[in-house]
Amino acid sequence: MKDNIEATFDGIQLDKNNIPESIAIIMDGNGRWAQEKGLPRSSGHIQGVENVTRITSECARLGVKFLTLYTFSTENWNRPKEEVDALMSLLVDTIAKETPTLMKNNIQLLTIGDLGRLPENAQKKFRACMAETSGNTGLRLVIALSYSSRWEIIQAVRNIAHDVQQGKILVEDINEEVISASMTTSQMPDPDLLIRTSGELRISNFLLWQLAYTELYFTDCLWPEFTEEEFYRAIIDYQHRERRFGKTSEQVR
Image: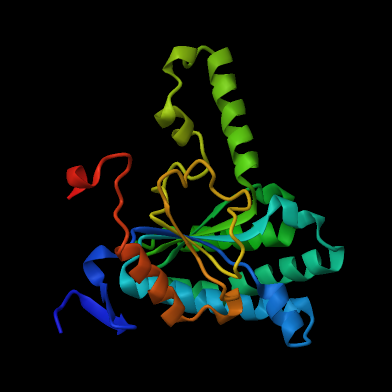
């Protein structure tokens, strides 16, 4: 087997030389997974966190540079209080538990979103973990917390408008680069591949600006059941796409 071949599924080989640099995942289906098994929704979230650990490790092993996980949206604040409280408690416990693993695997933790809305203890845990892992040079694990793309775009527009008022920039100078630089994701590349689990066929207010040329992959698999093999299938599918970025097939070949 050639060095650039990692594994084979359904007769299709995974090419290690064509691994997406940046992957984003909408981790959907925790609650449905739990309900199907007669368990409380919180059990689904616990199982979902365990799966985050597995997929994150696989990304690090494959050489993915950025993994962005849609963990808690601004709309999720509208869920029942007991579920939100359980999620916040799970986040705090997970960060405390997984920080040594992140350090061991050279993974840097980053966050995007309105962290100021999180409970104080959650904010402290995340800031402490980000500080501790800031020197790591491997995979960048980006957790989208209290995040929505419309919120992010509004913040960017406000910041640009303020710079115009202050005379730091002219209206005529506003372009894609200026807007991208004002996003919370300004220090990371746009996703090459977006994966959404659970069979839903929508973006759900996630990275709307950044997904302009991202390859989209939807699977019926619920997030707690999204195994490493399912992850490989998503990458294999990506590797068989032709990314043209507005050009013709002849131009990109």
